[in-house]
Length: 232
Image (cartoon, rainbow, N blue to C red; front, side, top):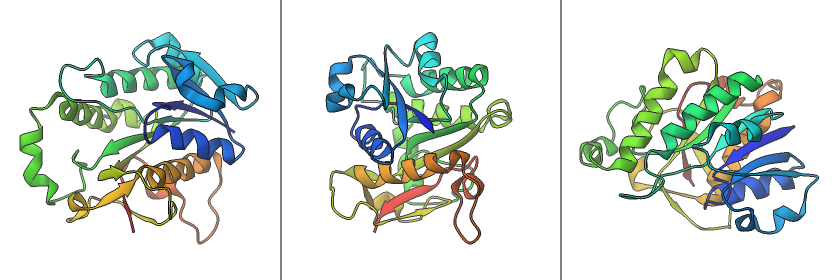
């Protein structure tokens, strides 16, 4: 199995990379500067590195070629940052490259503040109208709309994992819960970067696996859904 990872040097992405490799899964990554990857650059049998930008289609396509699933932990930061609009622009490249390369499965790290169709009313609903004027939030909203479009859903099997405020804690990594919708109180909860990464890797591992009787198979349970994950 091989996983293409974008946003692999971020606070969640770096753990995704570590957990995939520790599970014996080879990865293909796209980075602007491979020096930021750390020790994994010394493992050429497990890691294929492409230097470039996720805004550049050819770089994205090279990263995705030969992979079984695509994982994106890309995010946006504040105002006037070079990452403004990055999530939507990158996702458009992912989808087109996946179509050309014959890859169907896509896992995206999202945020709790972006509404999904089945959420209903939550505490986060009170805050969203204020956040809508922030470019980073608008980018995440537009990505969700793009993913929900018939054009994308007809060709790509995706899961958008949403987490509340993320914190750093490497204890009890597997102590988390996930839900199909956004909990009423999820806005007030936290999740660790490590737990979010662990769940994303578990989802990715099931991309080409057949469901076992009695087990939760994420690609059946959460196909074209945006589950919420919180630490417990």
